[in-house]
Every structure is written in C-alpha cells, then in structure tokens.
Length: 445
Image 1 (cartoon, one colour):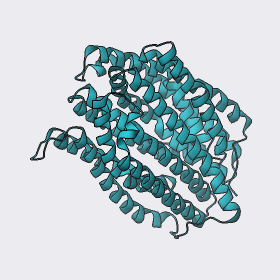
Image 2: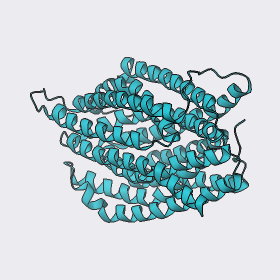
Image 3: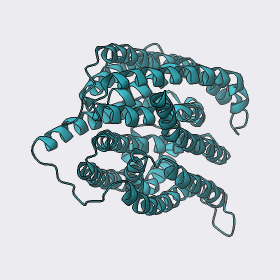
Image 4: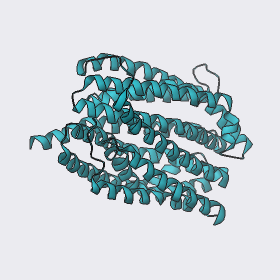
C-alpha cells in the first residue's frame, strides 16, 4: 500500500507541474496566434512555417534532454551522484553545440530554408525574417531545457513550472507591445513576435540556472565532470545517437508534412497553423505522464525493480488513454467555436475545424505513443528500438501516404492529414509488441 501511495505521489509530483507548464504555454500560444492572426493569412502561414523549422531544432534538443533524463534518473536510482553530474554536463555541452549549428544555418540561409516549405513569395519573406530572429533564442533554450531536466529528475519539477509562468506572461505582454507598436515601441508585426520569444527565452534561462544552482546542491553532491570513458562512453553513445537520429528524422518527416501542406496552398497551410495551438494544448495536457514515465520507470529499473516498473508502466498508459479520449471528445464539441475567434476567411475556418476533428480521432493513439515510446521504452536505455519504430512509421508510411494523398490523389488537406496520421497506428502496434516482450527493461551498468 505504501508503494502504491508513493507511486501516485511521484506521478503527481512530476506530471502535474509538467502538465501545467505545457497547458500554460499552449494557452498563451493561442493568444499569440490570435495576435498574429490579426495580420492576415500570410502572416499566420509565415510564422507557422518559421516555427516549424525551429521545431526541428527543439526536437533534437528534446532528444538530448531525453538522453540526459534516462541517465540521470537511473544513476540517481543507483545513488551514483558523480555519474548523474557527468550525464548532466555532457548533455549540456552537446545541446549548446547543436544550438550554435542551427543558429548559424538560420542566420545565413533563412530564405533558402523557407523556400523548401512554400512557393508563395510573401509568405516566404515573412517566414525567413521570423526564423532569422528566433534563432537567437536557441542557445538559452538549450541551457533552459537541460537544466529543467535535471530539476525534474531530482524531484524539483515545480521550479520549471515557475519559470514557465514568468516566461509566458512576459512573452505575451511583449507580443502585444511589439506586434502592434504599443507603449511607445514601433509596430513590428511578425518580427515583433520573434523578438518577444527571444527576450522571454533569455529571461527563462537566467531564472532556471538560478534555481538549479540553489536547489541541486541540496539534492546531489555537485561535481564538475563531463567526459565519459570506456564502457560508460560506449553506453552513452548507444543511448544518445539513436534518440538524436530518431527525433531528427521524425522532425524532418514532420517538416516534410508541413511542406506538403504549404504546397497545397496558403489557405490550407494557414488552416493547419490555426490548429497547432489546440493540438499542442491536448498533447501538453498529458505530456506530464510521458515525463513521469521516463523518470519513475527509469528509477525503478535503476534500482533493479523490474516487475514494479512493468506494472507502473501499464498504469501510466491507462491514465493516458482515459485522459486522451475525454479531451478528444471535448475537442470535437468546442472546436467549431475555437476557429471562429480568428480573423480569417470562412473557408480557412471550416478547413481548420475538419483538421481538428481528424486530430481528435488520432489523438489517443498519439498520446499512447508519447507515453510508451517517449517515456517507458526509452527508460531502460534501449533507445535504438524507438529509432527504428519511428523511422518505420514516419518514412515508410507517413511521408509516402501524405505525398500520395496531396499530389497523386489531390485530396483536400483534412484527408491528407488523416492519411499521414495513420503512421501513428503503425508505431503503436510495434511498440506494444516490444513492450510485452520486455526487451527494453534494463539497468544501466
């Protein structure tokens, strides 16, 4: 009974702050989208395309944070503070290195990058300017994400939530001031939204580092070590590389999807962009379960409690299923009212609602993949499994189906979105087989 209470307590302690943080960010992104929506369909599509390429960096960064989370949580479970420190610093330096690479690409080739997504010259120009500015935020975002991972692993998940509160409030206020030229500032439009993001990320980074320095020394003994050697180095690379490859190619696939939407037309692309905050809101509402799964199951595996890890995994998946079905039903009911708040043509609004309905249908499967693939199966360090599962789903099913639907069958965007989303079902089927085989259940040496 005590173990049962401890499990629920740990789930709430990790999942609730992460969920609140995601919901908060998603809610304010709706407000941001409304502000940009006042500027017209080209601005909506432009910011959506610029943000999509940035999401490619965010996904790679999330992969590094995931590797850090796997290792830190297992080593904390083993009471190996030195190795937990090593895992933190090694991944922090790697994340910073990737931020420099992506930033330079955005600074030097923004027009070329955005030309991949759309042929519309106005949308391309808007997206390129947005991307060039937003790239300044990549380094502080990297530091913020890795430090937040460490805080969650040591049971201090509430502090990233506090930082998020400050960040989204600041970002929203600055968006209003810079987009529309309030408080004596010039009217900057889409570029104003980009500058607002940069400032809020820098402030978030500073506050997160402050909390980390203050809190971590109370939980684990701080040691500055970052080089792996021998078997530990080999183990680290076996964890990290599959995650990076997996997330990069998954994100690249998502960008291919966006390019497909963009080449269908500016209107359909704007409709898809309108639905992104709502999609993020639903996934964010249950993202805490994925974070909790990775940390809790990782600690159980680290301490050698394999049967407990398996039982707790099934509980977390069940919670995700119940929550996603409920939220999907709410999405269908309120989706038609959501699209009406935007300043776009009626055709864009109708298309956006149909996309929301399709998303509601596939959302329970997406959530199961997030918890099972993104948290549970990775917790034992066997990240190569997920690399092949995601590659199979995205590149052997999603991308071909999306291309066929858009350019061969010439379907409208809601049907194209449904076709390519079937890859989620493929990924889940393979993941469930792997889960039941228990090959993923390992303790890091």
